[in-house]
Image 1 (cartoon, one colour):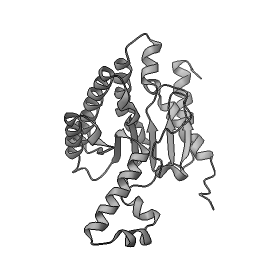
Image 2 (cartoon, rainbow, N blue to C red):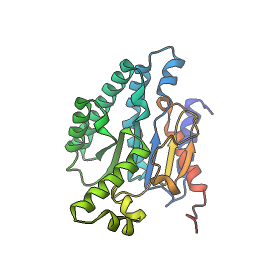
Image 3 (cartoon, helix red, strand yellow):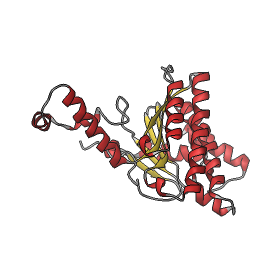
Image 4 (cartoon, rainbow, N blue to C red):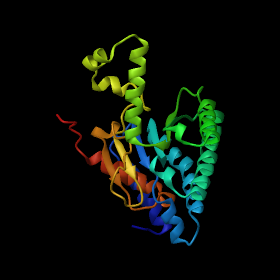
Length: 258
């Protein structure tokens, strides 16, 4: 629903006031989908859509800060995306590098957020992986504010495989046998080796562009998540769309299996 600007502002403020106190999720995950289709709708190349989508990120993080969200996970590039044509992929990697670099600048300068880069960085070009690690390191001193997970070269199955691999190596270093690990293994042991270790699982996952699937996003962590699928392409995602997602979340009865 599109409203005239004046009515839109009134509606947005009313929507924000309607959110019940104490119902905000601590962790919100977002699949930033629809950049290419947004560009195509204007007859523009894919890179234009990716750049517009990258420009949206800092605005979204500002909304999250205002709403009291503690953790945001942004899926910017999947392992499947690595199979795209070389020219498009290189443009996308360059745009992601620039976007993450700008986020790190803001986080380091203002102390507003701390970055955590997550994914199979070994599958990325060495220069890209190095730039992402350097950006993450620049915000390592930020102890308060929003935690921002940037998922690049990320796949949920890869994350679980990495967690199990890391767990096995850790236990082997302690001198445990494979049989001992198998006898002791439980879900919390794998949880402790996920990319998001130390953070709450996401209570709300949002996907833009009208697609209604997770495509492997946070497979382990989303076991109890609420899902919200938004028709808007990511470059068109507005604060009112975010508020609608949070309103929908606030109305759901989260029994968590009880």
